[in-house]
Picture 1: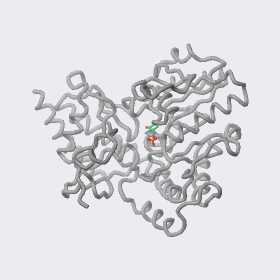
Picture 2: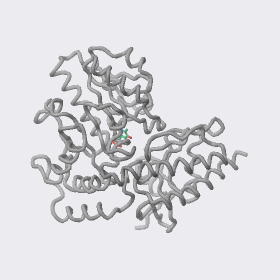
Picture 3: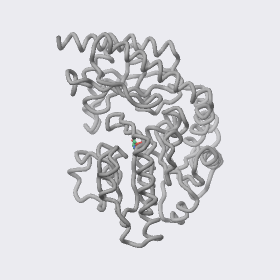
Picture 4: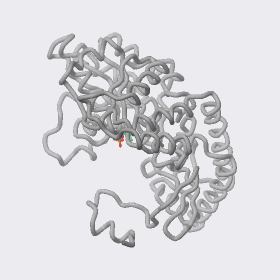
Length: 403
Ligand SMILES: *Cc1c(COP(=O)(O)O)cnc(C)c1O
């Protein structure tokens, strides 16, 4: 059967609006479409493909595990899940792991755990969950309601309650709504979807202090920032703040669907047998792949390489900006970078994305005002150079079209 982009509209629910080309093959940071056209990949499947496409370590782990055991359910446990959980707890603040299949599910587990912890430890008045405007935590009804864009959660009937939103990077707005009734604060240490906005160090420290003061749990959503993306395994390591619960997904599987919630033994104890679960969570294929990804990512070589590549991206973007004057700033951390468009180009991020694709480059946007870059953590230097040449052509085209 020959497949075309037009068929998407005939057979798929219209909640997405994918690009005109259909990729069929990827290797490292290059992708080829049906017509054999080659693209440099600065998008990385939205911060997922942390080792690029078809990394040999991942292909080996998948094919090896694929010949042994695919699925058991959680009536039984399996070796890859336990090995991965051991590695995650050894490498982080956490003592316990819950496996899910996505970021939203990891966050759903985090929020349900926080509510259960508060109920059992402090009673039924401690329910309030506070999150931040423009935050993003996934699309289940609980997580999308905790997310800070009402437009995403409106129109589906009654929402889960006791959820409040305050301004990111504004400690006083958080302080004003916190009390003994606060159960948990959920935050991205660096907002991804909301425009690539880093949390100030002093702000994050203040959030931790307020959580301690009111005996509320601090939940870091590291679905986008985690697994090497910012140059450490998790971004909290650089923030000087340790959360009580952390959610991780996206790069965790490097392209295989998996999510996880990490927490301490004390807090984890409140998810007793039967309180929560997932059929696929901890699936052997997913965990085997994730373990292989972690063995590569959690090394000084790769993590330091992220910092070096960040500099290459920043230098190239600044050079383009010197010439074309399109950005007000380049922000972010590691290989989660956002080029914020200046007043002249505000609202036009999609034009840059489309022009980039025309020139053989995949980039992302984060809202209408920011062009976002989340490439492979091991993207070769020459692919960065080649991709930036293409991006410069795309920028020149957008600038010319508005001249
Ligand atoms: C992508 C993302 C999610 C949702 O992850 P899914 O795997 O799409 O469910 C949650 N939180 C953050 C910060 C994300 O970037």
